[in-house]
Image 1 (cartoon, rainbow, N blue to C red):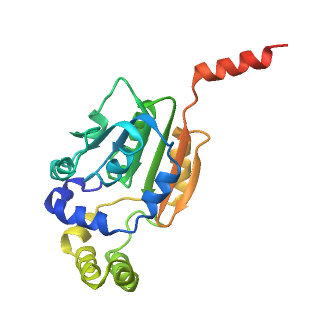
Image 2: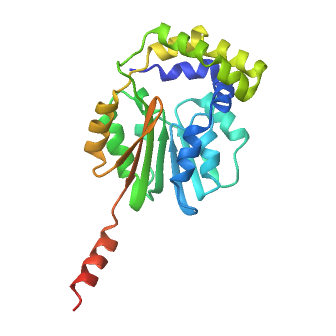
Image 3: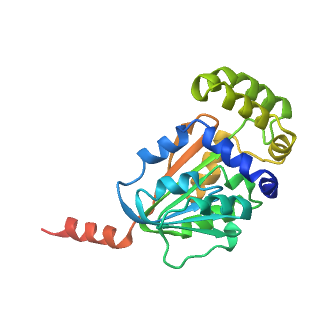
Length: 236
C-alpha cells in the first residue's frame, strides 16, 4: 500500500511542487467540464489546486483528503463555495451526491482500488459524471533510478518553463529522500490494467492518455431522462 501518510511530513513542499508542475492535467480537466453545474467532489484533493479550479465552474465544491496538513494549506486559500474535509475517502459520505466526482493521482494510494472506484461511482448523481486521473507505469513500482533520471532529464524544460531558481528547487525536491521514499511505496497499474479495472466499474467510459497518466471520463445515465426518451420514440 502506498505511504499516503508521508505527505504530512512535506506538505508545504508538496504544495509548491504541485504549483510548479506543468498544468497539462488541469487544462485537460477544464476542457471536459461543463461551463456551469451545481456540486463537485475533489477526492484526494491535496492542497486544493484542482479544487479551486472546480470552484469556478460549480456552485459548491467539497475537497476531501486524509492529510490534515495539506487540507490546512488548502483552507487558507479557500473560496466561499469550497469546503474541505479531512477524511479517509472510504469513510466519506454525502447523501446528496455530486454532479462531478473528480480525483487526480490519488487512487493508487488506496489499499482496495475496486472498492474505492465503486464508492466514487455511488457518489455520482444520475446525469452526473466522473473524471478520474491516475499514474500508470510498465511496472508497479519503478526503481529509484527512474525517478532520479527523470528529474535530471526535466531540468532544461523546467528552466525554460519556470526559470533557473524554481527549476533548481524542483530538482532538489524530486530527488529528496522524503519524496523518493514516498514514490517507493506507490503501486501503479499498467495502461491496460487501468482501462480494465476502471472500465469494469465505469462501463462505457472514455479513456485518454495524459503522458505518464490515464484519464477516465464517465457519464452516469439518468433513468428519468432515458425513460422520457423511450416515451418520445414510442409516440406515433
